[in-house]
Image (tube, rainbow, N blue to C red; front, side, top):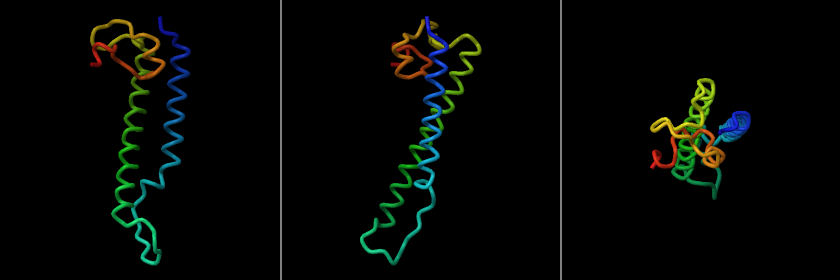
Length: 109
């Protein structure tokens, strides 16, 4: 049986981490400015590539925040810890690794 208290704490911890990283990396996602006076700095293309990677990472963080919200909803509906496909209980070890998991290993494959 899933310990809902621990699950809520795990979800809150992951959410806090994602929000903190998002805040810290906001500058990396800003529009690229070319400094013509600097020598030896990254080229504009490299800077744009780094910006694109930072934006992709942010999209992944936002996706995970939505998954956390969905996990909270499953907790409220007493469905947390049960596979959305087959209804079997999701092992606690899996939920420790990914507290937002909504499918058992077999169905996730």
